[in-house]
Image 1 (spheres, rainbow, N blue to C red):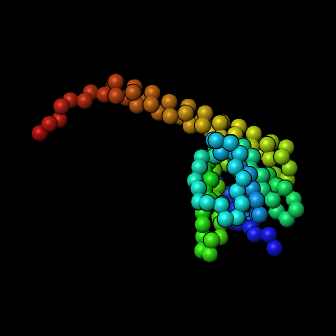
Image 2 (image 1 turned 30 degrees about the vertical axis):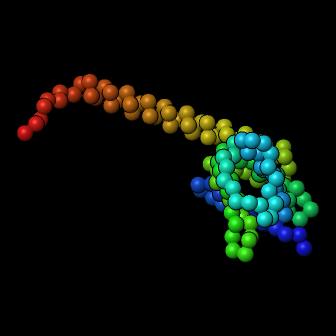
Image 3 (image 1 turned 180 degrees about the vertical axis):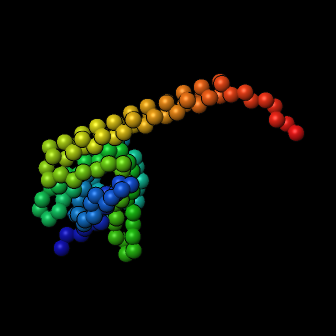
Length: 140
């Protein structure tokens, strides 16, 4: 029997993936890393991209949008790979995963734009209120 490790991908609002796999590849800032059961503990930033992993004899993909990957050693030396990300989508093939990643990135960019506009409106309103306020020295 081939040794396997636990692979979990979590976003703030859902568990995207919980599976076991004999191997996976992830693009870290210093290049592609292969992770196998028994891998040394590690923690790293993960940029937007696609993670490759195996289930049975099939290669699977999951698209993520920035986050962290942590390889943990559990009881009895079991390996657990935990990926925390703001957005992720599992795909049956690479094109599907890349498309899902592009959709998630566009959605996050739109949300960031809306939040920035709302912040600027509130800032301008506060600046206007402070400019018009008659604040005297209230020392007792």
